[in-house]
Length: 135
Image (cartoon, rainbow, N blue to C red; front, side, top):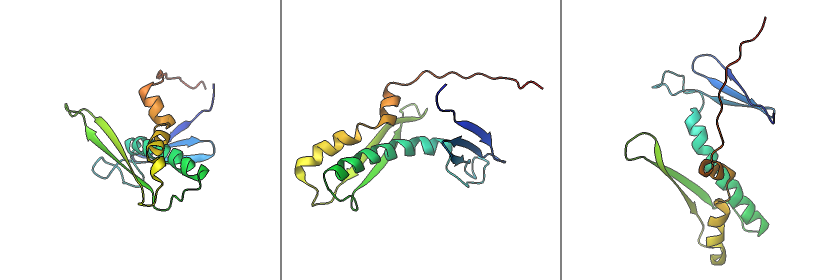
């Protein structure tokens, strides 16, 4: 059944995911009734987009010997017109003045290879079930 991610509760409004030896912690903001001790799940979702694009930009630069010290990606999002969630996510790759001009379009293409973005554009099927432990 592939890699399993195990979701557990950590007290209060903390919800954690254990996956491949890591524990990914989440909490709700203080305004949301949590302690604000970790990012909210939706923040992790948004971060997965920017960090996924980031690794593709990093690898692109690494393969070409381009330093990444002064490169950053700024991600912003805008609400849908009806206010029901995020309607637009924008990524701006901030490049230093000495970034090779011949690669400026290609680095955008590299960022667009992001697997997270591809899964949003072609989403998986979601299935939720409940089981009762015997015993």
